Image (cartoon, rainbow, N blue to C red; front, top):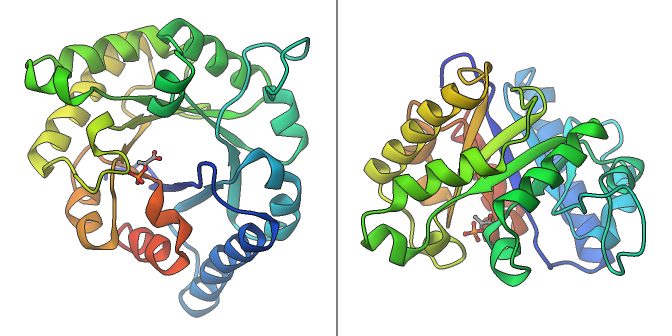
Length: 255
Ligand code: PEP
C-alpha cells in the first residue's frame, strides 16, 4: 500500500437502534484498544458511519478511542428549508470527522448526480470534514465494456476543486457488488483502482497520496486478497461492518 495509511470504514446504512448501535461502536473501540494495549500503535484508520439518529451518542461512546465517526450523506447547503436533510456543519457539530457522499444508494434512491455529489463534497470540505466520494459502475455498464469510462467520468464530475489527500478519500464501489455477495475479481479491482489513480492525476495535485477504498461485499474471507492490491488503500464495508468480529477481521488484513 506504499505510504498511504489504510482506512477501514464501516457504513452501517439504515441499521441500528440505540442499544445495538452503541454496543457495536463500543465493541469496535474495544477491539482497537485491546490491539493497541497488546501490540502498540494501530497503523490503520478506523471509521464507523452510523445512522444520523445515533451520531451524537456514538461520538460519546468513541471518545478517547482511535475510532472516528462519519455521516452517511450531507446536504450541499449549510441550512435552510430542506426537510429531512442534514448539513455538513450538523455532522461536524455531532462529532463527525468524515462523511460519505455519492454512495450508489444515494445516486439511485435520490437521483443524485455528479454535480450534486461534487457540491456535497465541497460542503463537507468547507466544514473541515473528509469527504468519502463514491464512484462505481452498474452491471449493465460493465457488461457493455463501459466500466472504466463511467468511473473516470464520475470521478471528474464528483471531485470539487481543492480536493486533497487530507480532505478526500475515493471509494470505488461497483454497484452490482454492493450488498449482493458478489465481489469483483482482484483483477477487476486492480484495473479500476489503477484507473482511478490515473484519473486523479488529472484532477488533483495530491493523486499519489489520496486513498482509494474498495467497497462491495467485502468480507473476512475475501478482504486479504483485495487489501494487498497496490492501489487499494482500505475498504468501505457495509454488511460486514455490522458484526464486530467480521469488521475487525477485515481491518486486521491491513495490519
Ligand atoms: C457499502 O455500503 O458501501 C457496501 C459496500 O456494502 P456491502 O459491503 O454490504 O456490499
